[in-house]
Length: 305
Image 1 (cartoon, rainbow, N blue to C red):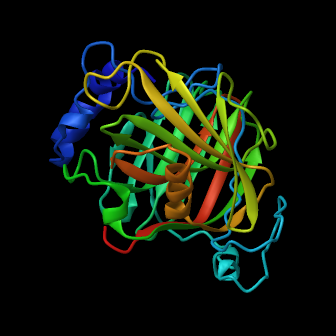
Image 2: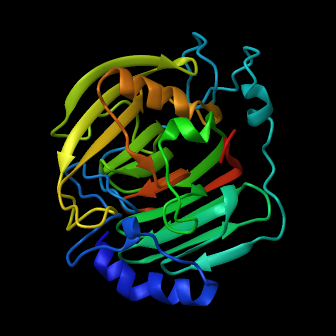
Image 3: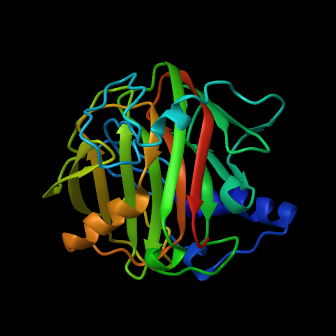
């Protein structure tokens, strides 16, 4: 997504309405675009148009090879997440490009065309719907980069983990991601942990460097890096060419635990070094179609948030 357009159209009004402040990392220079990818695999900030993703998420490093409906009964703690199947009642629906929330209930919705919505709750859960939105994104979790304006290396947040359970329906166009997403600054890195997709796994986002594989949470992830200019800029102020990191699971899971810090550690061991974290959120991103993803559980935790 063109970040300058995004700033003009909705971030400033949203900040004014909510009293939220922006950090230097969130103040883009002219032409900056921090949240949308393109069909060539560009997975920047809000709206990526790459290929698919997979939301498989066991928290252990066990040897179960997950499948689409994996209930993961291996005793690693994922059963608790997979047991949360009922959506909460009430909630607040959001339409249009907007963001708000605090703690691990910080949310954001964006689409470049068509219509999309997101419903959030007082508990870590959400639903996302789109209708020919072109490039649509909804996410929920921690926002450290623009609302708290205090960022630090991932190690200083302690152990970062996500628990999720999702149910998808409809279609998602030519690409889709369900998993974990975020940015870091200094260096500027846009990153994905891809665990599920409407389009199947695994996939190569394109123009990447294969950094090997790693076994995390009972599945094997392919690690990729890619240099990109996105569709106009990054979330990092003054940066127009940045790196993207990917962990793309080979098999699909729709519930469980994602050991986010283990991915960061694996990246670091491969020389894929993050800077200060701006966010860590559970994500659904699609490139068209009409569909809905419900997350009765979408909980990101950190031992030192």
